[in-house]
Structure formats: C-alpha cells, structure tokens
Image (tube, rainbow, N blue to C red; front, top):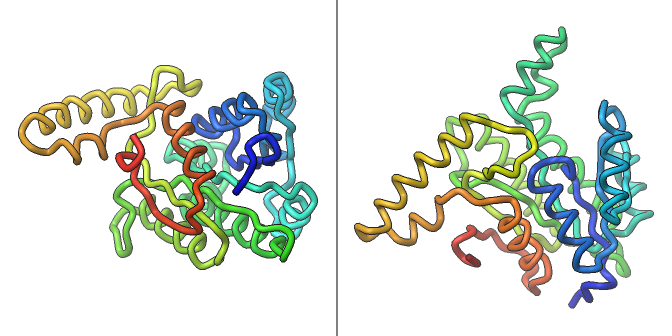
Length: 244
C-alpha cells in the first residue's frame, strides 16, 4: 500500500477546476505533486508561478506519445490523475480564430489525450514501477450514446480499462461551484435548478438518486478521488454517492 508522504502524484489537466484542487490537496498532505501544463499555454508562466507557489512541481511535456512516455518513465508518478476535458466554448474559440474546431473536440481531447496518457503510462510500467490511473469521467457515460461528450468519455474509460493498469474511474455529476476561476453562468444556473429538483425528489423516495446526481464542488470531489487513489482496489468504476 502507498505511503502518503512517499507518493508522487502527476495531475494531467492541472489548470482545470478539479485538477487545481487535486494539486492543492496533494501538496497539503505532503505528496510530491507534479502539475502538467501544456507547453503552448499562453499562461504557462503565470501557472508555473502559481503551482510552484503552492509547493508543486511543474511539467510541460508536449502531448506527444513518445515524449509523454519518457516523462512518466523519468518522473515515476505513483498516481496519475486524468482530469482532461474540453468545452463547446473552446471549440468555438478555435474556429473563431481560424482553426479547425475538431482539434479541440471531445474526441480529440477528452478521449484522445486520455488514451495517449494511458498508453504512455502503460509503456512505462515494469516490475519495479506500477502506476495507478485515476480517471475523472462523467455520470451518464455509456456505450452507443447520442452525446459526443459521453461517447468520448465512454471510449476514454475503455482505454483506461484495456490498459491493464490499476485504476479507478470516477463518474461525477455536474462539477460546479462559486470558487471556479472560469465563471460559467449557465453551468451555475443549471446546477442550482437541477439540485432544486433533486431536493424535491429526495423527499419522495429518491434519496439515492438525489445524492448521485447532485452537483459537487471541486474540493469535495478531489478529496474523494484522493481517498479512492489510496484504496487497494486494482480496478473499479464508482459514483460519488458511494463515498459521500
């Protein structure tokens, strides 16, 4: 079993709402924490200062299979948190700037980069080094869904499972909170409306569903993911109501 203070954590998607919180909590608990920032980020310098200020190291390996493999092989993270994800807003921004929005699609980012990271970790594994993947997925993920987002998440989950690495897949509901740096008005409104409906449902016999689908803050989600990371299970898919 892993010893917290001798554990190295790599967070892919570190600049996101959940990734940032995972880094903060990992450092707080004394783990060596490595925040990954893509090298072409316009805020690379700012993020580097922020992460190093909280006590985390920064890695800016390009999203390239061989380079990511070499970095994981060198850094040897015990736990690899994958919290990667894109949005329709980002796709539209790419298109507005004259690029191909497909490069920022759910297929290319949510699935493609996850599969790349998992394959890189699989190649680095050997008798002395066995990383564990903790993948942040979404509630509602299933095969043959009509949602491009959920379809990409399903494919990403399958890539994690097929890797044969130790893993935990966390299917989370709406992740939202007033502490999110990138304010998303419709997300906050949607979460409040949905939570209100679930509040009513909990009083008429649907308590489990109310807990499972209720929105969650990054802090609580990150804490749960860290707890699951240290579980002895070699592979499982969980919903947040299983540990709330």
